[in-house]
Length: 427
Ligand SMILES: NC(=O)c1ccc[n+]([C@@H]2O[C@H](COP(=O)([O-])OP(=O)(O)OC[C@H]3O[C@@H](n4cnc5c(N)ncnc54)[C@H](O)[C@@H]3O)[C@@H](O)[C@H]2O)c1
Image (cartoon, rainbow, N blue to C red):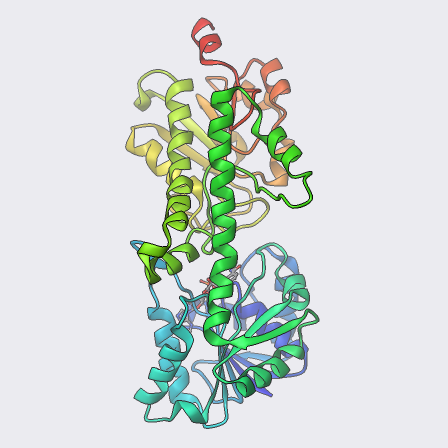
């Protein structure tokens, strides 16, 4: 088939490359002109090597072209962003893409929306776009195939994950399944569009609620003098319990965003979902409160080093990262901040060039992201460069014992291993 992929970001680019590898003729389009030229020149953004290799190969061999417009094709796969503005879904990118696809599409073509959207969106937006273009939606095949890959392992998961394929009709779903079967080894499960949309947002909302539960337990455990990490590990030995890990907040552009797609659909039937969101949104404030407690003195005279800008370990993605929020809150209080991340290149503020620059003369170090690269951070090295010796570990990442042995006062989220504030006052 000839396939037009619309939106060549984290999802669209590897999806296009996989389709090309499967033997389809792929033409990709992105509104970002700079990205188009870079891709054509073989410059693949991102740090995921399998994605870079796959995309570079598909483009170099001419199996995937980057075009200046959406070309007419047998199938269109829309992978544009769906952020929220003030916690409300912003569907403008999907609407713009659907409008452009509707102009190019011919009866019989398949239009797939992969972007995560509130239930009911695919049929409404794609249908309306076709009607506006003077076309009859019933003459097209329309499907929603939500993407479920995890950043960091995209190529593997694109091939092996099970996919939910929702069709406007059962026959549309089967037609879309045949396309996905050409590059997906995982199970392909057919349903209607709205169910597929709901399944996707339910999955991420489930994780958000579960993390909120872990975060609440972490705060409770601190008050009880119990280690939450041990508690969760032991509780998870139960065959039907799987509590996720607490942390400084929930980031990425999926888990903190998708629950709003549900709570906007009906604010009165989603109280648990909204409460979970609030619990997670408060976590950056908890981290900042620890800074205030463990680093007494005039904030303007204090420098706080933050390790990790990415929202989770070993990825280069800082979207909605808790580090952004913690940094903002610290600066609002007057602290000087320095964020270091060996993987992230794009962040809300300039990043420090090196670990040494971040920790130099810092009064406290906050471990925000559990990147494997941070395993190499030695308390002796950090302490030698820092002015103060405070470690705030929001992920229970470091061995607190060895940091205390190096003279650090430590706070570890939800752990018994934190230095008490009474000890700090004595020091
Ligand atoms: N990244 C992930 O891991 C992931 C996982 C599951 C689901 N999703 C969902 O997939 C969708 C895409 O996410 P992403 O991470 O690839 O986003 P992204 O921001 O990395 O890429 C989106 C691309 O679309 C382009 N774009 C915007 N409007 C356009 C238009 N009208 N026409 C053509 N191109 C346009 C942008 O320039 C950008 O390059 C979102 O709905 C997201 O929630 C992402």
